[in-house]
Image (cartoon, rainbow, N blue to C red):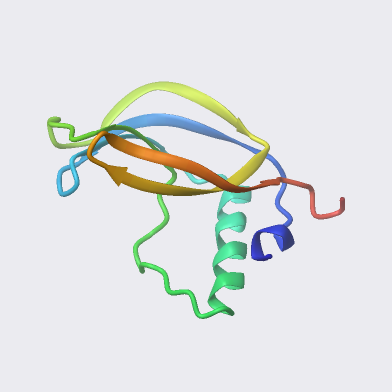
Length: 117
């Protein structure tokens, strides 16, 4: 219900950084900046979910795509060639880690719309 009430326009993500989280051994691609529309989407979802007593980590939101699990990479952030991704909708995914790897299932999908639509 919360996701269906959020009205955010479509936006582009520009992935230009590669990194590695050593604690969970995940290699990722991330953005140098968070587009305004994405930040508004995150805030809208969090506000609606807080009303339902959901709790959130206090760390800053960081848009990224997981590239590899169980990675062993050099530590640090690396600049990379920019890959652009046009975002026209968002999904709620269920992720289950199993011995044969992660399994994902889409639970819901919502289009991004201009607030006036």
